Length: 352
Image 1 (cartoon, rainbow, N blue to C red):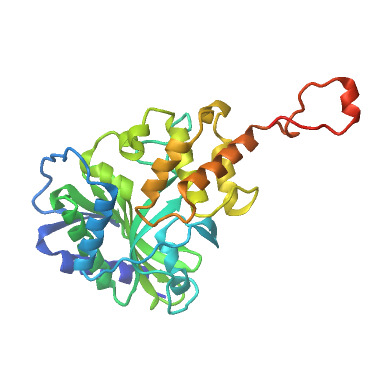
Image 2: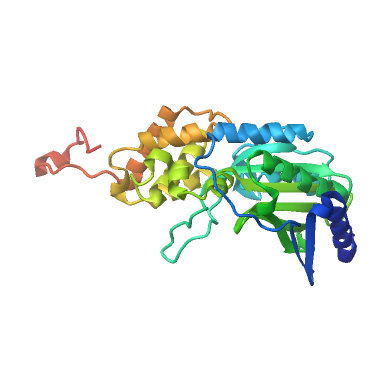
C-alpha cells in the first residue's frame, strides 16, 4: 500500500516540476492552491459561445495535439454500482476495481451522464450551473507514474487555452489527502475559472495494488461554455425554449429525451425508472401542449456527443404516452357515464 505522505509529496514535486516557475504553489497544512505567477488579470468575456459541436471539436483537436485521442461514449445504461452512467471514470472499472489490464474506454470522452445530485435552492429548484443530465467532458486512462498525472494537468491547461481560457484566470486547489472508497484510493484537485469551479482532476489507484494507477479528469461541457461568457444559464442550456416553461420542466424533458433516445424505455424498476421519476414529478398541465419542440431541441444537443439510436419523433411518442399514463387515475381510465342497463354488458369503448 502506498503511504499517504509519500504519494502526496511525490505528487506535489511532480506538479512543481511539470508546471514550472510560471505557477505559484501555496500550502496551508494539507490545503494546496496553484495560481499563475503573474496574478489574476481582468476578464473580458466573449460575446457568444461557439456552437456546441465546434466547442467539442476544439477540445478534440487540442487533445489530439497532446497525443490524447477521443474514444466512444460509454453506454448510458450501466448496471454496475449505478443503473445509469454518472461519470466517464466508470470506464476505468475493470482496471482500477477488478485488476484486469483493460479499460472500457480511454482517452478523451464526451460522455452524457445522468445525476440527481445537483445543488438546489430551498424550494428544491436546481441552481444555475446544475442539470439532471449533462455532457461530462473527460480524460480517463491508466498511467504508470505520478508524473503522468502532472502532465495531464499541463495538457488540460493547453486544451483550455485553445478554448479561449487564459492561464491567469485559472487555478487548482484541494487538500493533499488520500481518500479511500472500498477498493479505490486517490487524491483530488479541483480547478476553477475565476470563482467558478469547473471540475476536478483525480489521481486514482487500487488500494491493494498501487501499480494500477490512473488519471480521471472531468468537467461539464455546459459549465465550460457558461464560464466563457458568464451569460444567462437558462439561455445557454435551453436556447430559444428558455422562458417558455419552468426550468424544472425543461430539465426533466432534456434528461428524459437522453434516456428514451438511448433506448431506455419508461419502467417501474431499473434504468427506466428514472424516466418515470422525471416525468411523474411534472405538474399535469405542464405538458398539455405536447413535448415535441423540447424533445427535438434536446435530441439535437445530445447528438453532439453521439447520435441517439432512437429518433426524435419516436422519443416524442414514448414520452407523451408515459405522460398520459402518469395522468391517469390510479384505478385506470374512467368510463364515461352510461345508463345503468349498459353496465351489465361489456362496454364498447372507454375514455382514451
